[in-house]
Image (cartoon, rainbow, N blue to C red; front, side, top):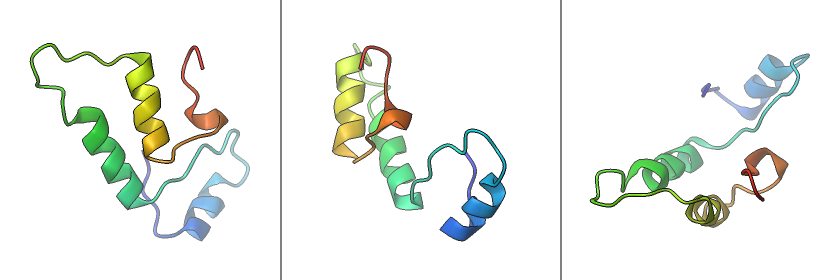
Length: 71
């Protein structure tokens, strides 16, 4: 994960790099971290592909970059 000052800063950094990847706001990144790691200490924790897909969809992280195996 890289943090940038602005979308323009991210675009300058990505110029000429393949693939450029995906940018998300700091808020989206924080929400993803909370959703992804927030329940890891619960007894019987298990990350299923379906649960991961729902989490990404709920956060609005869709498209080919966010595809999971089996999508």
